[in-house]
Image (tube, rainbow, N blue to C red; front, side, top):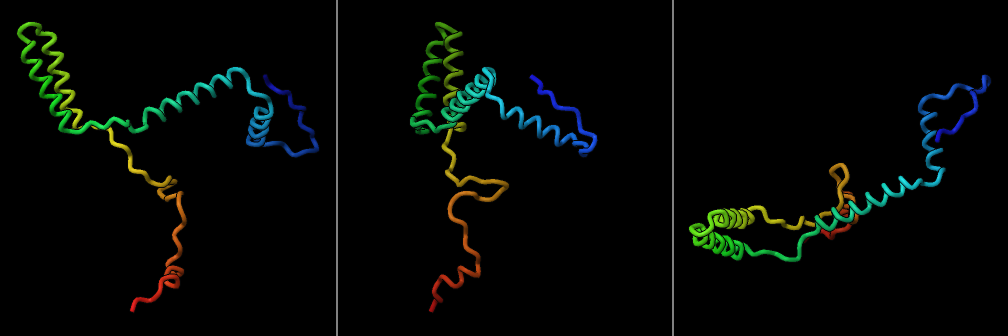
Length: 141
């Protein structure tokens, strides 16, 4: 829905495109959100929640020795079953390889670090200046 703007007054200076865009943005923010806007916001929020849940480190940590044992058991099962059901033997062999490969591709929680912006730490206390640090610490004997 476009809002009608009155024709420009000849005595006032002509508005630039930037001013027109700013006025248009302000008009859009003044109106209440439409059903589509609310649905988009809700979808974005649910997607962000899913991403947060997916990125959360799992509470179940697999020790490497256990994954190696699972891979070995699956390989032995694949060798035993391949004579009876070749397709099942192939599937078990692939599962064994996947269990072995998971040793190199384990999800590890990211090291907790303060938030950064343009390469600078944004969290925590700011570091005092060097000249201030010299006055704080007592001289060493």
